[in-house]
Image (cartoon, rainbow, N blue to C red; front, side, top):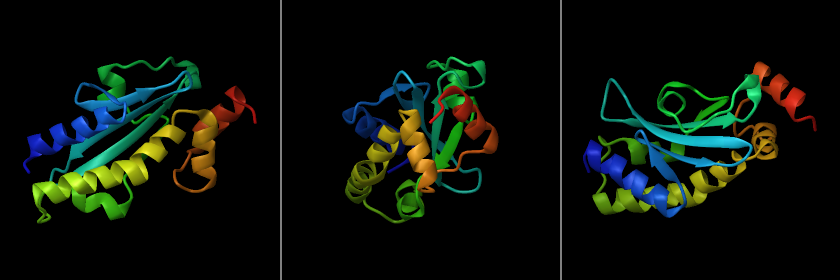
Length: 151
């Protein structure tokens, strides 16, 4: 599988799970959050990082929309990457047949991406992930959440 095929396959699978695509990213929206996935190529090898970004509506006076600046350039209010056990899927230097890579991508979606993305579509889900240490909230974002969405 080459670089172009990996991106295309990733987005095809994402669409099957209800994600939309724009500017080379896959995203889902809710009234509370915008969740974005972006494959970022390493400068040093044929490895991709799965950037997972969440924009929480209203934080810092922002209304987040599907726009190239948010999807491609900005880090979001919450930033994360795939767990290490899925890294080989995104490393094209790792020997793996196209069929195995496709199957492993589906496993990654079922076991990690879908549950993670669903929680990132609500403020309560983001808080739950932070409490279980599945993501880190920087203090300014946590303070802003507490101000806008008191528990």
